[in-house]
Structures are given as structure tokens and as C-alpha cells.
Image 1 (cartoon, rainbow, N blue to C red):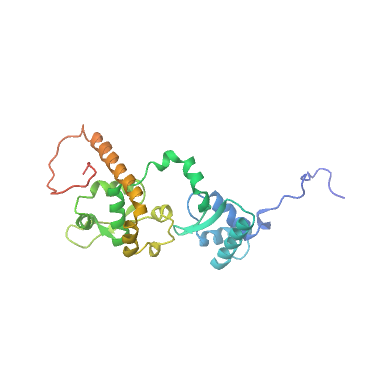
Image 2: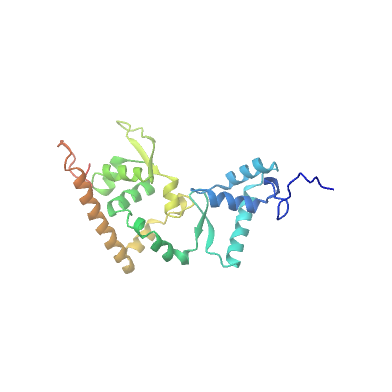
Length: 243
């Protein structure tokens, strides 16, 4: 006979953490995380919380694949994508127009042409120094690199062994996440990029980027109106003032 003083849940006994399976745990962690969660993290946390043997990376991958199959079979708007070194919950690509409309204000804050150029050089030549970026672009990229660092798309990777030991720059996991890449090997080849730029359908996007570039240059110029004058021996500068 059960103790009358012991409360009994209305819907039966509540499951403890050790009763959940790997799929439940993986889904909960990926849902709650702001950044991509690696398979190793999921496996370690699952073992720590449940006290069971740590599952393998393949076990985690299989669990996530099964979750995606369930999402598809039930017509859910969600899917788990692998990018930026881990897994992240996302909406299906076919539903992107609805999400873009919801965040239309944030979508306006995007990369200008000069920032995209600089980011592309860093991504394909990393680790790379600022003088090397300047050489490829033909202009001073100090402003662009600082802006990309503020956006957490580029970070310092160390110093070069050359004269003056200039800083070396590379892309971040945030860069991989924002561009939907698992790792740098997923970057398109330069030939693929050239084909994209030659595509007539890209002209509209190109025009938008150019407009954003002008707007950013105007904003940067207004920020430097009150700054004290200083000499600059650079023969060329970035399209964005502030260098």
C-alpha cells in the first residue's frame, strides 16, 4: 500500500534525467543552444547527466538523422543542420521567405561590397596579414578588417614571422555558421565564384551590395567629421572611410 503522504503526479511518475534517450537529449541541447553544438559535446553531456557509457559520435549523428527523418515525415517546419563545427536547429529552406520577412529590419544590416571583398580574401588566403589583404584588393583594408572583427566574422590567429611580425587574420566559427558551412573545405572554388558573378540573376544582388557600400561609406564619413586630422602615408585607402 503506497504511503498516503507521498505525492503522486497526475500524469504518472515524472521521468528522471537518466530515463531519456539520446535523441531526446540531443534535441533538447540543440534547441536550447545559441551556437552550433558538436557531436562530442552532446555525447559527453549525455553520459555526464545519465551516468551511462558515453555514446560515440556516430551514435549522435544517427540520432540526429532519425530526428530529421521524423521532422520530414510529420511535415515539421524544422530541421537540424550541421555547420560551424556542430548541429543547429533551423527552419526548412522553403520557409525562408517567411523568416526573412519577420526579420526584415535585421536583414538590412548586411555586408557591404568592401566588407565582402575583404572577408573573401581572408577566407581563401587565411591565415593572412593585413598588408597581404591590401595587396589583393588594391586598397587599405584596415577599416574593413576592424568591422569584420566587430561582427565576429574575423579574428586574430597570431603573428607572421616576417618583418615587423604583423598580425595574422582568419575566419571564425561565426563565419561558418552565418554562411552555412561545416568547415572551410565547403567554401566554393574560385571558378564557382566566377560563374556566380557572371550569372545575370546576380546583378540585382550586386546592385543591393553597391547601395549598402555607399550607405556605409556615408555613415563612416559622418563618424569621422569630428575626428582630429592626421597624416596618412597610404597611397590608397578602403572605399570605407575611417582608415
